[in-house]
Length: 152
Image (cartoon, helix red, strand yellow):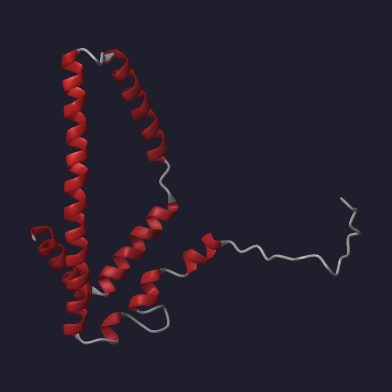
């Protein structure tokens, strides 16, 4: 290969963008239901619109939650059933003392991690609580729709 002379005018420059900082400042629900400048959704839409939007989105979430939950429960239950059949047939031998030791080790590890609460989680909980308080009509519509989606 031929040696290239480095030309400062020909260099490509790239700007590094920290997406985590951008995402923290721009929550999706702020854009959808009213950002910091435009006020809550209650000031922008009628009560019927808010309940309809909350109910429809809640029904969709509840319906998906029900279907995914059934699939996950079937997969986990089927896995346990296959393990029990394999255990009784002699294909699998479980070292219960080792299992107990590993579970206790995992408990201690989780206890250490749980003592140090994540500040992002506390911030998310505070923001969610504030959103629910500000948009109580949409939230109640979502909750009702979610229950109907679970039942259907």
